Length: 312
Image (cartoon, rainbow, N blue to C red; front, side, top):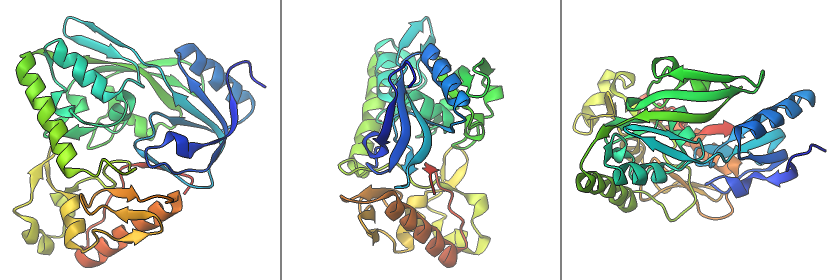
């Protein structure tokens, strides 16, 4: 056995916000860059596949689990100097919003109430209320799970897109830190904005039941057949380009409240699936497939899944 705290046959349901998932053959929480490198070297020697897990808020795991090593990144720190913030990948977005507001730094107050970790937000270029994490990223440091070498990319090299970055394309890299370039702001005004975002989510999102946030990306206007778009012309918003909220499309398709097993399309926000209790990853996956099929049949719209799917 390795000389670091490796566990075997660990239920991943404990580490996902959906509370679903089978067993990981091996599991470790890495709290330092050095540990990431050591674990990576060990897994390479054993020819084990590696899955990198952050806080589990944007992943759906099959009951089949993962026959390899699940590396949960728990590197957490925040450093602020002038208008530059550097943070560890496991630092919560809530912590970053609070610290930047306290330091009177503007740039991520739009993320008030945003769940998940800093690395998760970078990987998926998280955004809301017209803001995106790419707007403030100056550099990202990662480690190759193949070579163990550190890689630093600037904003352009991260290839940010709509809920996308190069890190979604590179399964063999793990983010270990990143820097934000922020602007001076007024503390009271920043707090007001952040709190309004938190309240918006509290009012409209099903936060009382296990979920993984939005299941589908919002739908670009360009992806909607012209003969269907007129019905949603009053719902178009900028996010950051013209989109129709997928929640509206799903609701109009009559899918709100639909259940498969213990999984349900939320009655509070139709772009959420919730675990009513006892749901499996397979229940959620089958519900996702059902939503996609019905929406495509009714409107010719192809929905794009936002969370990562593991084991399906």
